[in-house]
Image (cartoon, rainbow, N blue to C red; front, top):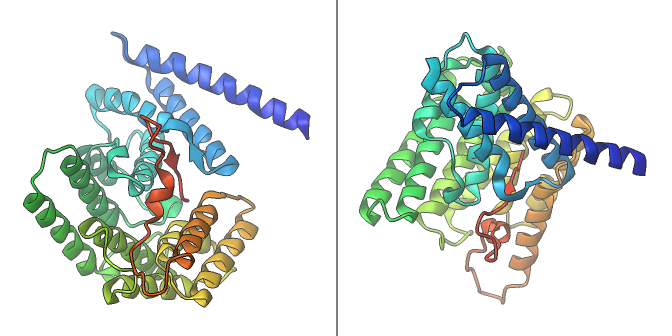
Length: 323
């Protein structure tokens, strides 16, 4: 086993060195060739997958941030279009992971809304096949997190921020799951879309009012919609593997022991089916549930899972990749 671990570390170091060299080249006067750009994006994705499988955490968020230099160069050169299928595929995945890490803190958002819109228009159903989230929801939550980042930086007033979030909330509630095309005719795609829809609504509600009690009807309705939607995906369905993030979001505000047990049971099913283990979702949920269980009777103060993803001593926070 130690030989495998040593080999893994060695190859990881080689990948990081190669990536650093390519990124340095990309910042020079000469553009990287298409194959070089695609290679950089592929290396970044492989490193992120290694992070997810090993700890679920990407140290200091360097990989996704590093992808931005290549992405900007790509857009400056000749734009991003469906002809660049490899680049579109990798950037779609990286843009979604950027959203995932920004759920823990909007200041971590790296890709701009313009880039997300470009990626969404250039990609096809492969985005949903890999990430699960409908592109319409991806764009709405991305725009909302960008407004949250701008507010935290002092670029938006409170009123402007609230208007933006209320608009995003309305768009998400109004999303018509029946009026779009899915990667296949399997009706369970609509349940998958519903799970992501209400996971994102739940994040908007927390941005609107971080102190809102978890027992509030609005919060618990989102939890119920997420868990009910995921319950319609059987354990032998491949779509189950896309549901780690919605299950985590529903679990973060699940209050009853039976709903918490359900979330862990489904995460276990996903792990067995995919043979891929990301320890972060379970670890964060257990911290939130333990902290809530330790509250005094009658204390309904919200305990946010994002509390456990922030290290005050770090200037550049780690990425928590909950997929």
